[in-house]
Length: 149
Image (tube, rainbow, N blue to C red; front, side):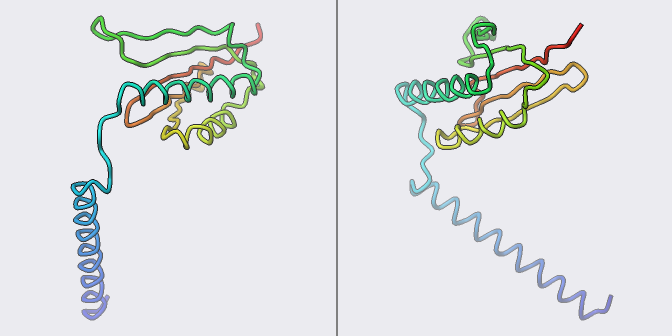
């Protein structure tokens, strides 16, 4: 490397750092002026969003042929209080395409301001999909792949 290319690389880094600093200032200003809304959700808004998410999940479970009546549903508690999250567990056939379910669920949830974060335990054949909205997990769906004995 020559001294000229070293100097150019330093200038590029300085320009990038300045651009990032300006972007951070603009975002901070937008948030403080109210352009970016960061207000807490009302009880009614939360109820409506949870109902819409429930409807989306139920529709997709039916579409993928998952028998909802064979699953279990509960509301977990922490320190004796409800977490506000719903958990479901289903046993599915080995032909169940979890990646397709995950993709389709994300498509349905995006307009609702939610997304899916999935984990898979390959050895146990367990897939868990967490529905996250506003930085909080509102629902977890666990699929256990049935094994032939």
